[in-house]
Length: 273
Image: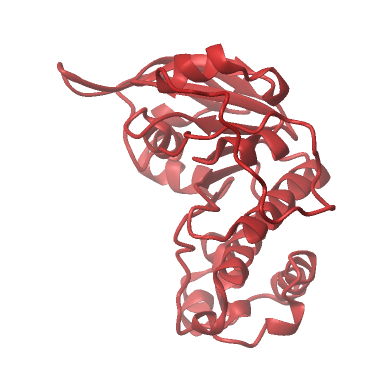
């Protein structure tokens, strides 16, 4: 379980990115983090893995308070946190398999990582992960030969290679077309359910989040203003998060996919961050 307790990030007296953010994410739950630009979504994710240093509050992964760790202990703790990036963060000249195995760098001696000689167990697991994300036949391709959706699948497999206890996902569909976006979100949510992984997904597409996440947390000006189920999101909540807008205007789904996990949530427009 992940617990945030009064998490605050202040850059100056006039610039508070996060203010007293408090919530828990139990095992297997996927939380969608929504809000306008500058709301603090990316800052929150980066505080959890301490790419940004919190000003106050606690971040508990299980029983470990990530805020108070020394640099050495933080390196160990980061192995427990898988990160999936908007821009994939792959090494383009390496193969798909080599990129997935890079998720094991925190677990192997330097000489193994330098020579790319990973233990057999890690290699076997990487093949299983590539099969799970649908890229087994692309294992020997260079990363720069892949499509955007395929690159994101490599990023998912790499994060899983860490055998993490938590997934942090930063706008995984921002560079993808609508159909591929649904496929990637479906894959993330299915894997979290299979492995009972808690996850926080920073996502700008509210209708997409409604289809796939278990819970929505809305941030505005660094404060939590909504914490509810996707099905409960209504015009009043959207106004609380994003400000006044004509939320009755619906987006039309130009590319229906019968395999979508849910067809029911409200479709809303005008929610790009």
